[in-house]
Length: 132
Image 1 (cartoon, rainbow, N blue to C red):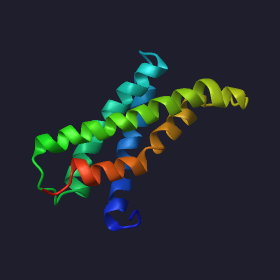
Image 2: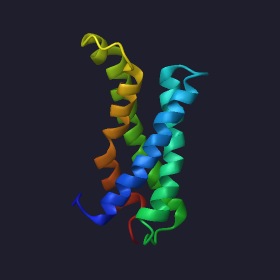
Image 3: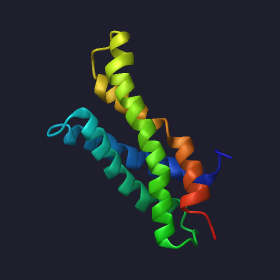
């Protein structure tokens, strides 16, 4: 199910959106708290992901745009909860408990961004960009 051309395209476009997410968090973190920066970065990455997925991964989609957007947002609400709690849990609890003090926020956020890849793919394939 996961090792097909469409999933590989999803990984590439999702990787690009994840990079936007990751680096925009560093930028946002200059002006906001870490937790706020994680949410703002996720939204930035989500907009990027929608346009890339619609253009390159699920281009055969016949579902109306408003339905795709609605389901895309719903799938990403689940993913942002995963990203948020994993990022904060690692940054403030797990890594300090392991005595990791170097790049803790970057490591935590990177792991938080990667975790929802599989659930997001399934959600977008079967909900956001499904055929009528």
